[in-house]
Length: 524
Image (tube, rainbow, N blue to C red; front, side, top):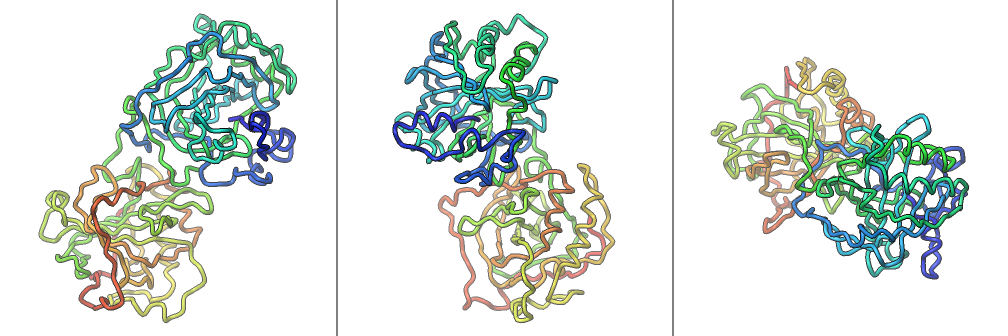
């Protein structure tokens, strides 16, 4: 979305440094979207960027996303002028006339302009946001500033700007596009960069939105989609598209003089996309976060864990993984330490030996999960680093575990389809995968499963020292699984207490002990 020219012109005397029109473009110059991060003062390479490919299967319903309140969206005289900025076509609104609030927004926002993103004249789609990989022909962004804030103040706050995004669909029906016919008639007057024309027709924002259901929308925190890409936007993307005739869609690239005016989707980087209660979402399968997971199922009654203050003997039934995306510095652990999220997390799931699984998920301590952070392998550790590793029956030394992670990840290309599985014949033990992680140092709290139905039946053990794995092997999980950001956001502590081991408490009887070192057959 386009705000950089607006920032320069309307900053009320405070000059805001931003990328000038000559410094960036969509195509045909040095600073195309992949190079926007290199522009001086740009935020385009940060972690909370827009737009996104929204995957409904990974979206969570938020009951706080209630109905919007729109002020003067029905006004026939709110649109002041249309301008060709060289990057978009923008419609400016009269000052202090149009407002939006509700819908889970943090206050009231003053609407200042709306603009468009499109593809090319060969009917190539050009929306910025996508739904499950689908790109619409166009997208309209209605831009509002938090009421009472200057432009400078707004771009410095995470929720300083609210943008309402509407997909635009191209149809064969000419009867539904009267307001759009009136609006697009002005495009012939703004064929040159910086050209501007006064809008004299009676056109309201509601006329343009038409019969879109405004109770159905997605919400996430993001950025402007043009340099400087300030991370200051509370995004609302409506599920239903606006339908206009296909010939009117084509007028935008034809008359404006440029094509493919959109930024590609950005990485989610641990953010969550929420949906209003009215928005229909696909059901999530049990035991899988959002959409899918990769799980290693162990042979029955061969692996156990006890000690460590658990109070019971637990049978280990499976282990699985949580990860981020394929970007180099992606993070995807579920737990965080001092707000730090690790690249991956491994969960070893155990049920009380005296209970069935059905009984265990209904019992407060029926399950015990051992959580291990996973990070990129650094320089090899000295042999002294394994001093905290308890004695188990293992086929590996206490040194490098890379060989075993390589063996395990070699199976990932075989299970790229949902519900596929493979028998693992390679000799791999849990000890082999954990390597020389210090298993005497950990956190403990009572919690829940991190996937639906989120049963509050888990004694959690989260080990402080991460497993080190080669970065290329970690990348195989999102690459071959075909999905990313497989983790639940952190939850509130409420009145619970998180406990930690200390040096004085390190005794053999307090250590979880894995009794099996060998897995002859693991099912994924």
